[in-house]
Length: 637
Image (tube, rainbow, N blue to C red; front, side, top):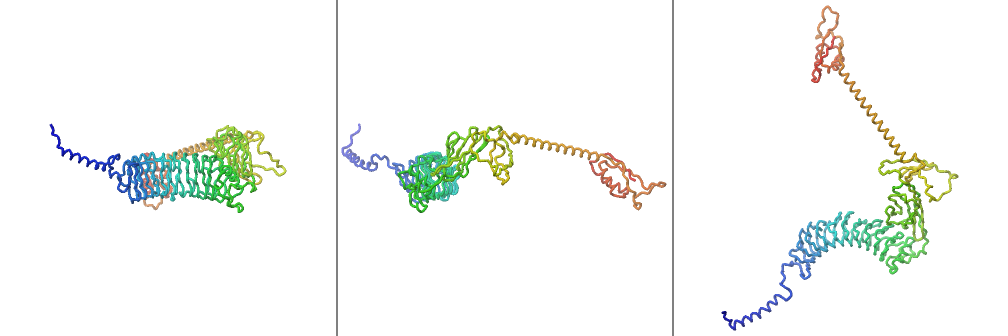
């Protein structure tokens, strides 16, 4: 059995226990667990482990410090001298949500620099030295919502620059003062973007923003936009706030804002606007905040409609929309105070009224209605429908200049079309009749064109009939005459003029119908082909006859050759037979048949020849190996 401890030993152990308890309590406070490891936070940074925040600002860092805790959610590296972000720098920070790298000297971001940041929500890269969009570095940032690239020397934004981050909702590209080019597809893939800043980017025209179908706020201030044209905001059907301040805007064309019907706030302050087209804000049914101050407004008849619209739609804020700059007696007055009775305004004038048109079905047609830029244009269709620019119709649309366009005319489109032009002083209307005939021949595949010259005899003053109404009582009045290309040259007894006429099929002139043209063309082409074939056959026959004649002349053999009496003084000539009166002697020469013509020519051209000379010339022609082994006797006298 174990002996009990002495009394003094028990007292000593109790005293030791009482001494160690306070020491342990000092080293490990209750509720905080084990002490943190100093290596979990870089020496140059301050860390707050409770909320996962690491701050390393203004420490003169030239690179991202190592040892950042893995549970970091908020990392601030602003205002240092970091120049390069290398690949896999933040690979271990899977919980990081906000990364601030602004106000450094970053020139290069390597591909894969942000690998591992699967939870990153906000990335700030403003006030650095990037010259391009680091598209490759944005790979795998599936949760990125905000990207700040403001105030970098970026020179261009290429196509699909942000398509790797389709989750992006806020994009700040402001103050890119060296920006020279934005591709038409730069913003492809950003359907979820809600806010875009392109202010102070040295822009001279509106970029293509149509892919941003979900955009709600657009900042375009402090650029250079002399004109705002229709279609500048095409596709931005969700846009609610638009700021274009201090951009030098002088003219806003009619229908420029027809594509942003959801707009709530519009700021056009500090520009060079002096007037606006009539009913410019008519499509903006939700507009409640408008800023037009600090513009040189010319308060005349073109501003009367704007004054009325401001009183009706923004009655509580008379100072929002600027003051009159001219004329002198109106200077200083608010736009809402301009009264129509102050001016003597006239109704709008139609510069180019629509004209009656005859056309075949399934063609493209236009009815023009040109007027002053400050007037609004509407079209009344035969069925009672009223169309304006931006109205939805499958085949008929109103162009920016007021022209009514038919993409595919149908027989049901026949009828009277009325152009209605409006300003604050009144209305002006002009009508035209569209006559549509059924298309009897599909000419879509025809590749030829025909020009018809027509001589028009204009009657004298005594014969000129009284003018008739432009709109006929019935379609039967219209008798289409011509079928040709849309452009015809009309010759008159006075001055020839170039006009445009519609193409139509006329039942009273079958000679000029398209069927006759096609038939005549086929006949001409057939005759041309026949003549060509006949000429080719004649050439072939002539070639064969000539070749046959040459072959026969080669086979012909000359049997006898006369040789002029040889010179008596020639020592090589043999003496004549005694007792004979003959002055020459006959020799037999054998030569291949292929050399007969050459021998003949040689004998004829040589004059007086001796037998030896004749044999020498004959032998020179026997050197051809291709000659046939058939000899011919030549009689030489």
